[in-house]
Every structure is written in C-alpha cells, then in structure tokens.
Length: 447
Image (cartoon, rainbow, N blue to C red):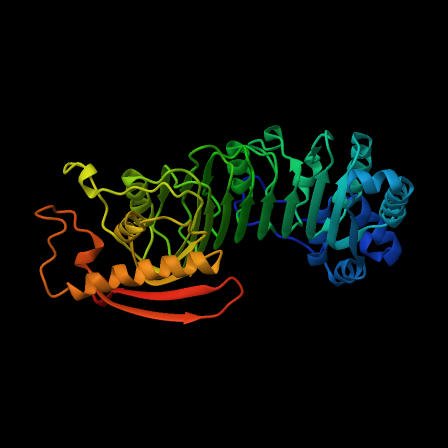
C-alpha cells in the first residue's frame, strides 16, 4: 500500500528540518467496502494500526465485523464408534462457520476450539482452521485438544505466534517447537495472559516465549512434563505466576526474576531442590506440596530453606501420602548453614495418614515453619479424632511445661519449635470433609 506524500526538497548543505505538507491519501476516498478489502490483505497488526491514519480509516476499522467462535466436541472411543457420523458433522460445521473468513476481514474477539482428536487425519483440518483464524485480528485464542489413544499430539502452526493482536492465549494438549522462536521473532505486543497446560514444551522454549511478551501480566504453566528447570524472567510487567510443576522431573527447579510480581502460586510433587527468587513486591504466596516419598530430617531442612525465600504472609499446603516420617535434630551438623525459620500465615495439612505416633511429623513441620493458623483436612472421622487428640495433647503438654526452661535441645544453637510456642487456641467447625482449625502463635509474630 502506498500513501503519496508531497515534501519540500531540502538543500544538501542546509541543515534545516524537513517540512511536511498535508498528505494526499487517495485510498481514503474509496468506498468503505473497498477499504475493507485492503484491510483483508494486510497483516492483522498493520490493519489495526490504520485506525490512527484518519477518521475515515478509523470508521472503516470500527465497522469491520466482530465475531466470536466457539467449537466443542468431546468423545471417547466407544462413543466415536457409535457416533462416527456425528463427529464428521462437527468437522463440517466448523468448516462452514469459518468459510466467511476466506473472503472478509473479521475482528475475532474470541476463538475457542475444544475437541477430542480421534485420528491423525484431522490434523490438517485443525491447521486450516488455525490458518483462517490467524489471518484475522484475533484477540483471544483458547485451544484445548485431547488426543485419543495413539493419536499424535497436535503441532501448533508457527503462524499462531505471528498474531500480534492476541491479548489472551490458552494452549492445552499440543506441541510447541523451539524452532518457532528465533532471535528475530515478532513480539506479542498485546499479550497480557498466557496459559500453557499439558503442552509439550521444554525449558528453552518457555524462556523464549516469555522474552517475546513484554506486557505479559499473568502466566500459568501446568503439567508440562518436559519443563524441568523453569526460568520466569524477562516479562517485566508480570504480576501473577501460577505454576503446577507436577511430573516435571524428579527434583524440579525454578528461578524467578520478576520485580513486579504480586501473586505467586506453585504446586510441587516434591520439595524443590533448587529455587531462587529476586526481591519483588509479592503480596500473595501459595505453595502446595504433594509429598509421596519418605520424609526425613533433611527433607524438612530443604522445606525450611525453601520457605525462607518468602515473607510471612505466605500460605503453605502439605498433602501427605506417606506414613514413613522421621525427624531428629541431632542429625544436622553444627557446621551446616540453616536459614532462619519462616513465618507462615496459614498452614494446611491434608491427607494425613493414620500413624501410631505423630511426634516426628509435628516436630519436623513446626521446626520448618512457624504457622499462625493451622488447618487440618482429614479423610475420615477416625483419622480426625486420632490426629486431633495427638495434636491437642502434644501442644497442651508443651504449654504446661512452658514456665520451665526447655531442655529438649540442650546447648544446641538450633532450637526446636517448643522454645517459641506461646499460646494455642483450638476451634472446630463442620464442613464437607470435616475440618479442624488450630491457631499457633509464636513470639516471633509479635516483633
């Protein structure tokens, strides 16, 4: 497209600024439906920018048809064998609904495709649908693909990452290739929210994607098995990070470099072996750990060091799936560096197994952190009664002996939680699942 502009010539020896004369925009004088044709053949990002050229172009852009597309079809193999013709009708209906995109430029406010991919032969169909959507000014893309049996995961086309108008992008059940993201890749200048769930993507690809999202505010990464070391950085505007690092290697690692991060939620299948976070203005912190393996003294040491990265208004949820727990403070060497105990606003214990003695469990947890509130989520009434009797008796005995100098740790510089407990308040209430509430108060909380 050419816009003619008349300018006064400048003398090569004259350093005076160049003087512009009003541009003669002949294209603006075309009828609106002709201007729509021009917009159709332009890249979506450039088409959107034409609204700033003049009132004529702004009216033309605002008059472009706006559409929402939602397609959904889920099935299993048994249903597919009985309703194979019905699935074919679904594919045909999507083709017909997207047919106008071949001839007219459309502002797609939301494109949602949720389906079960039951055969590899349907991958080209999805390619065609994505190509039509990517050619338009698309603001929200939600792609949820569930594959059946031995069907290959869908490889998202590279053109999706050239849609500069995207503000929200959600991808589930597809593959992202690292080759898509080079140094000269176009940036998602409008992207504010990104969600990757059950996506085949490695650490490097995640890093490159975040580098291309300068205005990203919310990032969610869930069940992406290949991402063993996640580095969240480069997104300077990021405010919310939600990470479900479940199944991501035996010992997942995480590095966070976002100075404007306000909310951090992370789900782990093990206590993280490596974690670093730069100083930021976090206001909401939630850590959920699904602990399946044996917990020993060094496990609680790792937990204490991890929680020490955050401030006291964090929430910690521990779901225990192992009844083999041991904690002995004497196992720790005097030369071993130990971080200060973390103050936790709220500690939630769930799926607590039935054990003969809960002493090691309570010692380990209360040495790792000092919770202000403790919530217990137990599976059955019997388990609840057994555990609560143990907790209340255990804490009550500690308080009764509180006037005496605690001798449990001897001359050791590493003191257990008994030296800090000042008051306990027990309060029960009913809830589906039967919960119990205990309030711990440590002297540290008063300073």
